[in-house]
Length: 307
Image 1 (cartoon, rainbow, N blue to C red):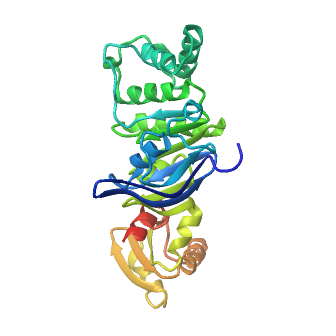
Image 2: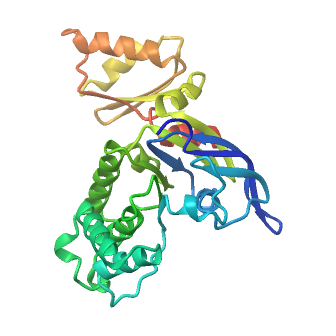
Image 3: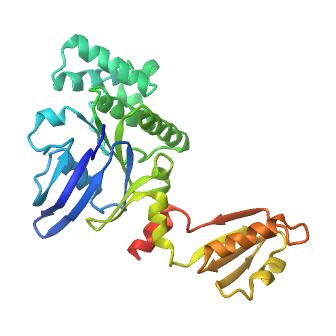
């Protein structure tokens, strides 16, 4: 697909005196996009507007070129995985996906085939005839995604799909979302934990207090930090010797010595990294075993923008 898969212009939604979304201007291209922000930022409200469940208080949202509100032609092209479970616990995974397909208007034969394909996609084939109340949290999340996939939607909306998952379940979810993106699906995945989204895509939207703070590639958003002091952590067994080499540099704001770790704050990260690279190659210099920039991630960008 080409062009924006979702477009919002002046999009606002309020409930009485509570403003949940405020004047959102946004275009989301096909592919995998992360919708990032803390709980209460407006992510779920935005998704429900995209699903046509809410009427905008002002402005509009277009999904696949049309308004989703009371528009079955568009809604049948959207798959949705809600954050909160709503299951009949004695129903099997297969029955859940099958009956959701029937609800969307599929005949029995098509609903059965589509359910089996979708369950295979999320790797639950061996457990599809077991009751959902015997499923782990990760399996419950995957069966919800299966029902979203079953209609072969053009757009998938996944609301906090990593919530409550153990480390193995998170890895399985990361792999599934990346695979969907590789196979050409457009996915909007919301999360309040920024590193989770960075694991599946570098295309992000930062939302806070009902407003979009920034959107684009992770690298583009990191450019917003150009004038912001950066923190670099260097692993070294010769902490004080290495600190002495940086002590007189104009760009260095502070140096903190720890156990085999030096924390350097600088207003010129490029200069600091250049010198660290040269030192790492110099056999006579203090030994450097690792370098990390704690500001070079989405969490730091988010903290900076809302700070």
